[in-house]
Length: 444
Image 1 (cartoon, helix red, strand yellow):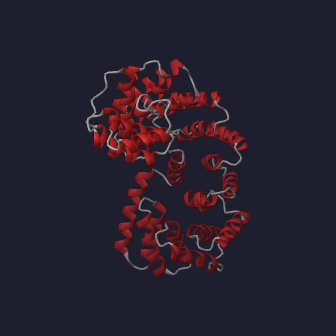
Image 2 (cartoon, one colour; image 1 turned 45 degrees about the vertical axis):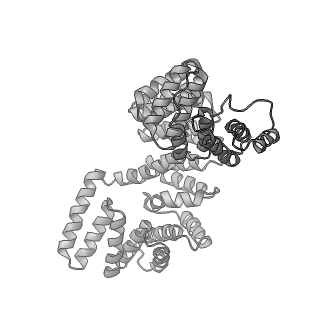
Image 3 (cartoon, helix red, strand yellow; image 1 turned 120 degrees about the vertical axis):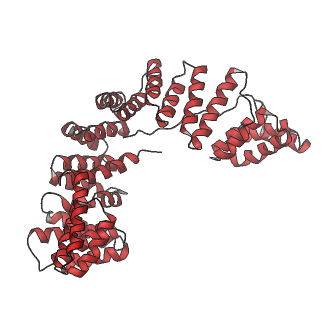
């Protein structure tokens, strides 16, 4: 999983504004000489230092207009525009400025160029500029770290590792070790990645992000028991952490501890903002777990659905759990409630795959073949890589006497089988989707 990565870039200019002048004095100077570029630059720079970027930008634009060749005005304006996330305008503003001869100003220039390139999603240019900046300040630990981040984002993994190791050599820290873990994971060296994450945890044991990075790396490479141990410790240390709880539930599912997994996920649902995340990403696991859903689980999820009557996913998961429990018990006389729940879910969100698939299954179990066909066709459209739903649709076509369509579903099912390798891999496919979602939660 990626750690929180950012392009550290100090954008403060050192010479644009005099040190012992107030904003009111600078305003007086502009009022006296409204077209004086230096006076405008001074006032704009003071506003910029005060964090009043919206006020600074138009004043600096006036300074550039008054003296288009004044490099200091263009650099100050580019800094301000970058802080306002107006990166395209910042690039245009800075483009005519030649690299300064003075080393401190050249360093600022390179870092500013890198920041603007990063803001414009040009990772390669950002990496180039940060590498040039690092050449000017080889002993700057923070700059070496920022360069490694930029190179990592640009996919230059060997360069990123070298820059990270340079930063580590100046002074080791948890953020550097976590970044090294990210780089090594991307390079495919799982052992080195785990070592980086473990060191980050050791250096900063109170940091949730580093512990989660370690656990997810272990899960990703099927080192389940150590991952579960890390997550169990993390869940105790960070009891309010949604990600830690849900990752622990994920680990339990992977070792077939379904009851523990379900209990953990229900606990995660009770956390603030937890219910929607768990339902959206793990609702299918709650329905399709190995054992018949526990009565208490069904009751709690359906109580949540009653409390959120307009939530399509809540209705779909409740209906799916009810359907699974009754189907496992071969109880075909009580499909009314799951059908009602699932119909409502489809009405609320017609593109909800869980709702469509479970409703199609409910109609199939109830031998309502035409209705089952309609819902299951929508299901496989929304989930084309699922072997189960292609198989069920094929059976529905057979019941309806549609042999050619059934054969086509068998062909599609075979294609899905090749992707999933075996039925047991469907769980891993669902978990992989969640793993990506969980990892992306740490992005800025």
